[in-house]
Length: 422
Image (cartoon, rainbow, N blue to C red):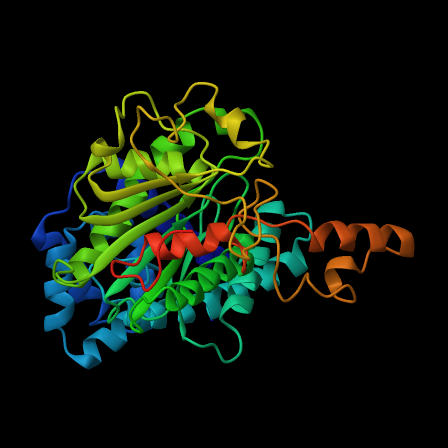
């Protein structure tokens, strides 16, 4: 077990790699080859020392051509891949071009190690807010993966800093013929992983009802730092930084699936996530089947219309009861405007489906639908608890089970649905 000081050094090095995606040029093939060869030929102790002594290796790998990484990884022996997972899980788990099953293995190893070292850190330095937040994230990720799940969940991203990021796939992205990335908006951080993965699970389940293929995957992607609620959501800085990370993730998927021929790749985004995702999709032709925007914080003026997003289909929906989305559009365009050209997605409730009543992406889950659960433990006044619970059961977000919004988003991301949009 590596100590906190050494672990912090490795975390910092990995954070540099994450930032490197935005600023460094693509790494040369020889550098990538040398880096991977080193990681799978050393002992764990030697590998940690090597990474600390050569922090540029992390940046080289983070900026590697995913096609070359994919080729190297596939040519490596099972023994070499196992050694790399063991020696540098914090790198391999986020390396585009590595298959998602192996990334899941690496990230679970890293999760266990990070939980152990961070728990010790918080115990010894309880005032360390950074360590406290990291521990909340790691616990949330662990809870997201805990217990038997149908379908299986895969931890396909886990990066430590500056604020931890994570992504959990519901269903296997390595075999799926329909894959959907769920991109969150303001105020959704990696310590919300349980709730955001529940949103992905809801999409997965509803896609099945819409006629989607059984081998599908929905990825709860908290892969960028979202803005906090407030004025930052009306500005473009967080989206500008997040868009290249989404492009890297989408390209990485396509590379790991040999171009993803025959795979329908879609994006569902909420709130500020629509701004980030639109920036990403406008910047590159990624072969996106469907892009669904819910409660959009707005599209930047330089994106002239839906055609500039390079998607087969573009949808936008917003609830009358959503009073927050409009504030994100102080300097941006509403994608529902006729001039933009998106298909309007209805979310107000029809055909027995529930209406969206607020801006939130999801309000309901197993752990807050029960009035005796820990979600309500701090409320000692029974009248206050009754009011809060009554408000809860009558409030619905865009990706809550049973809503028209969820049903339409699932239908819109399924190429040959068994039903039409509501």
